[in-house]
Image 1: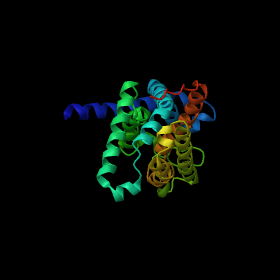
Image 2 (image 1 turned 180 degrees about the vertical axis):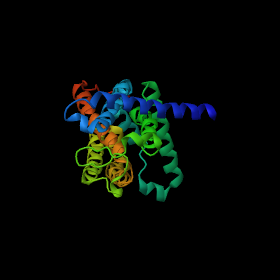
Image 3 (image 1 turned 180 degrees about the horizontal axis):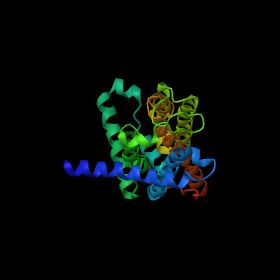
Image 4 (image 1 turned 90 degrees about the vertical axis):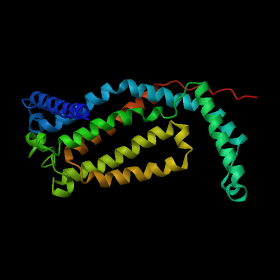
Length: 253
């Protein structure tokens, strides 16, 4: 436990040192220097996303592989069709068919070396940094940022509800909008999620829920979040546009 605590504290100290370094770079620059801490958060976000590029590339390849397997997945679902009416009339048969669907689909993924959760890798890798940024901006490590603003934001260390300025509300709104757009981009290029009713519900529900949460987050963290979403949107546009169209998998006879 002490070892994990040491790693966690090291991560917090490291992020604080990186922010301070960027702040020292931005501070002497005209115009930018007045918002040097905000630009430091933006720069840190860019560094994190560049480091995560290998995972993002793997994510895109996984999504393309899933897309190429869609005809086979559709064939399996059609062969072992199990609608909700069957769940009422013959629940045992319904469960058996659903289980067979899952078994055949997982077998197909294994044969083609496809990880259906590959699209989640960048998000999972970002979570420790996001949590660390939250801790960084809510502890004494954030003392140098107190009173530092950005555009119409008065203080990066307080949240919108605490009176951080009208700019804080614009950032909260921008966070929700950019999250929705980035999720929609991903769903449009991932057949596994585009055909999933639950995923379609989450497309609208998650941005709304996280926008509400963002009202209680330090504005500096919301700025980190917005920058992350904007990077994700641009990255997905480039990767999906540049990727070659997948060749459909041949259906088994």
